[in-house]
Amino acid sequence: MKIAISSTGKDLDAKVDPRFGRTMYFIVVETETMEYTVLENAGSESAHGAGIQTSQLVGKEDISAVITGNLGPNAFQTLKASGIQSYHAPDMTIAEAIDAFKKDELKPIDESGPAHAGMRS
Image (cartoon, rainbow, N blue to C red):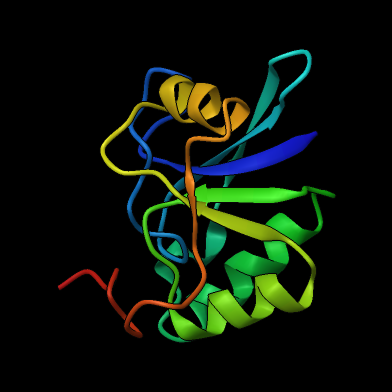
């Protein structure tokens, strides 16, 4: 299974970024082999529509699930419409989040958070 995790860095020791639309990176992992690639999120600096742009970016990666902190309304709806399940990972590294995902310990994100929660000031 291929999953995408919002990340503060470019390796499995980085923390899960609580932001989805404005995360700088996604770690895209094949959970059976643990092979991963780093996807830079060009939408992180967008003035508007970062959640939708980011949802479309990860959707192109043929993933089954997203692990992040929060999803705004637009990102939530776009992922849901694409059939991509999203999961909440509290303060964890990418490696810990993958392990928790494999053990079915992550809570699904069943509703969106507030709009613009990840905006930088």
